[in-house]
Image 1 (spheres, rainbow, N blue to C red):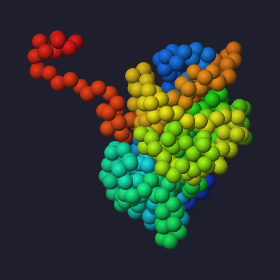
Image 2: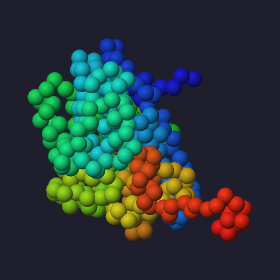
Image 3: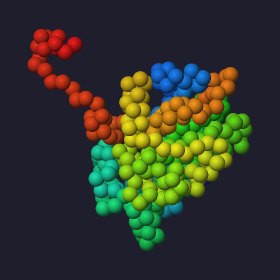
Image 4: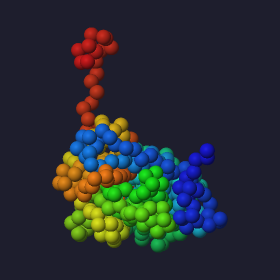
Amino acid sequence: METLGIIERYRDFLPITEKTPLITLKEGNTPLILATNLSKKLGADSYEIYLKFEGLNPTGSFKDRGMTLAVSKALENGSKAIMCASTGNTSASAAAYAAKAGMRCIVLIPSGQIALGKLSQALMHGAKVIAIEGNFDDALNLVKEATKQYPITLVNSINPFRIEGQKTAAFEIVDELGEAPDYQFMPVGNAGNITAYWKGYKEYCDKGKCVNLPKMMGFQAEGASPLVKGTPIKNPETLATAIRIGNPASWDGAIRARDESAGAIDSVTDDEIIEAYKMLAELEGIFCEPASAASVAGLKKFLFQKKLEKRIVKLRIVCILTGHGLKDPERAILTIEKPETIQPTLESLNKIL
Ligand code: F0G
């Protein structure tokens, strides 16, 4: 069977015409994995916990869902170049899809603050990478100004086609479960993704594909939690560099998703993020990046605080794992004890086994 990318699979739900060129790396179709070991560890017998592993997209993050559409539409509209600010994943994705489309790609990144895997992707795909002495929010402001001045398409999630593409992840979850989950836990940075999922669930229910909507549970890193504090943060700090953002562009979208779904937006500490990051790798065989683990850290926090509803039937919880752990190998190595080195003899080996 032919592999379909998200535009081909969900054409009827996307702003596509016969004239839209199809720039795809066959993104989407990511697995929804039942997390039985994690569930046991968290003492969550009253729930079915699923992990949507978005790290298995072509460039290793959920950004590909939005980028296939944003780049296809940019090409349709005659654009020759795209530009974004990024904590890493957007730039990796933009660079790859621009390469496929034969377009120029310019990315602005906060200097010294993006994971090495992501930087290497953007460079390998031939993007013009510019590091700025500032954070993501500064970079995004600059991109907004620059794209007003030059004929370059902005492909951050303030580009509505990004949100349109990303909403397809909600469709996949409903298609697989036969209904929307009861809760969805996810990390929040610039807040495009929570906005996209909520739009996706609502649209799919409107079209009769589901009856219920999930409670949207978004988690920011404590040192970068403007939505929780209710005010932008000038110097956001967290080791989860993907969500090191102080003034999310889709602020209103996130608040709407929370309020309309009777969900929550809360924060988790870096220690809680690392604990969840290790738990996923050790118990479920899933290596995601630290920012992604904020979803599971949030779930653990809410289970511990007994803040989740219980029913006689098991409620279904989906945690979104937004990016692959191999993006940031340095963090993994810093987190885990280094391997021992021994002489190549059975005697030495016996000593440690
Ligand atoms: N998880 C990962 C792995 C991310 O890269 C991001 C955002 C998020 C979660 C948060 O998603 O911004 O839609 O709320 N990364 C952006 C980037 C900012 O530039 O790659 P969001």
